[in-house]
Image (cartoon, rainbow, N blue to C red; front, side, top):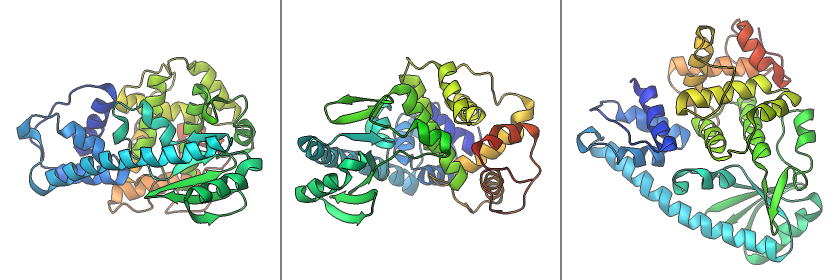
Length: 344
């Protein structure tokens, strides 16, 4: 396997609970760089520890992986404490709150502590927004930024993003996510979480949003796999119908097919990257997602990855980035539905 393939293989072993096979490799530096760009270094380090001793990296690279694993575990323990303070403060004030993105997905990972994240994203009702900010300040949270419908507050090293609405990419998705505390979520006390089918829908929509604005890292595709793998009650046909209703049906199929190709996600789809006419699209997506940063990067330092990123920018943005390329009909079909005209 080449470097990208082995990087994906180690992540797939983690998601599938399979002990990885190894061989003596000279590309651990590049695997480390892919890991850092995608914020999955701790997961790769965990899998490296399962390899035979003579197959593991040596020297400074080995130490870098070890430090990342130890730091990630420590950060997880601290984040749990911060989250407990945050949630108990809102609960004691009787303020409903919806936990989204990484914090809500992490428990479904094989080793939750290793699923890293940045800010902790929380939704509150518009009518509760200012009161939420005030009770959190009274509890001792540091105010970083407070605007009319969005705030950043800090506990220790953890930053909470507090918003009044879920992210959307078009009018249709805005309608779907306009009432997050009603029929698309379920509650345990004052703490809400999205229902399984809407949780997956939100993750796919979130990936589409980041592809529009700069790219998505491999951890987002892992999140897709983890939710499908754990939410057995999701009817995939029903889910894809929801995606069609907000005009991202083919995009959703492509992203799930990518997860299936990389991680053997248990999903039955009509779309597959195994078809010959999908080879170019798969190659572009693979290079752009693995070679980019967590939310993409205009230039990763490698020409092939930069060209792949340019290609995605031309698909997802009206503004030109790099030289436009002629799209195949399959590519137009998949991505033209996002409400942005693909460049030609």
